[in-house]
Length: 437
Image (cartoon, rainbow, N blue to C red; front, side, top):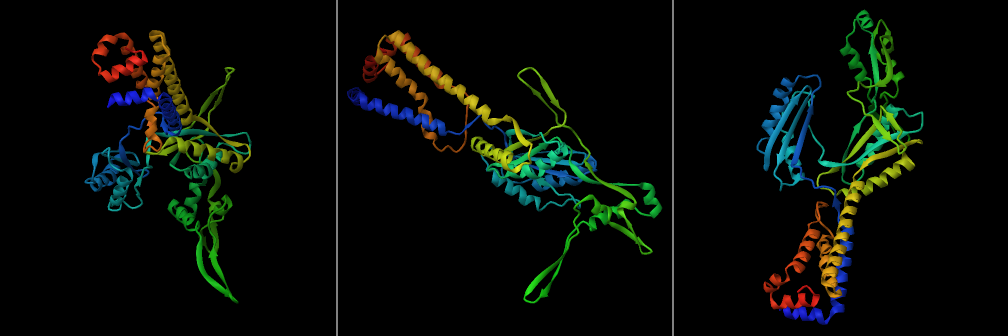
């Protein structure tokens, strides 16, 4: 059987050469279409449950939040480990599932169990976003050359504009924001005036809550038309808070502005994000307050397609949506790493093919051996043929096939007699024609 195949190949050299070139071209096309990841995702299948209860001690969090969650979550199918920790005002529960489990199915089971847990009033557990530790694919900052947009304004733009548009990109599940002061309305109450008017902070807070709401009424019939009636009470600016009535005494309203100062200001910060830019001329520009963010990739998704969509979205934001002078500037882009890695692999593969061909020609001294060496080296491309539509991205790890080809070539010309004695007649016939034996 092998002899007939060899005789056919030697008798139809042009046909075999054309088929080999077709395979080589198919390998190149497949490689270009192959989704490549810079490094594999070895993280466990997990679901994280985060519960915040501000101002409560870690011991109370453990007793009233973490333990009830653990009791309810125990018994979920395919759970390998259940880990938790309790901090001041925070409970974190992590369920580790089997490697072969489906992540969407796992999250559904956890969501079902969350509906069964009983926690203190006002405490609402939430599932963490479905992303992997290697899913941080795009780091960016908001840069402004417009003096009208300070870090607080940039923070508001990121929270309400950038994050919304980034989450519209397929397979981007969340955007982690860093830096910049968060804008808030502040009511700085004078405690002496509270005592003088006989009020408490709870009364002031309750009145602010009651007056920051819209109400819907019925409708008024006007001829053949219907006019809806509603009451608009949502706070739109600081002056609306100042005019809020807290209590009325003897027909005289007591407003918020009579006992407090209302203004817009930054929320109490727990940290700050800075960035240093190193220019080619050696100059270093420090920015001690930068608004930054990280786009998070859905676990199991292909980063290449998501990054291409992010690049289009960033261009759209910079050109049409963001205010003049405000731009999104990336400083870590996973596509750059993938490009450099794949370029290195292609460079090494090409060098390996050329090296094998040159060494075969030098040691064998004929063109036929070189042709066989090229055909042997083309197998570097053939593994990509089945990968037109792979289910998972291919991690760029190593180039073992280059080593295999080099070893095979070394064995061919290093010990021909021993190899010849251990081969069948059909294979020896082919290697003799190539000049190996």
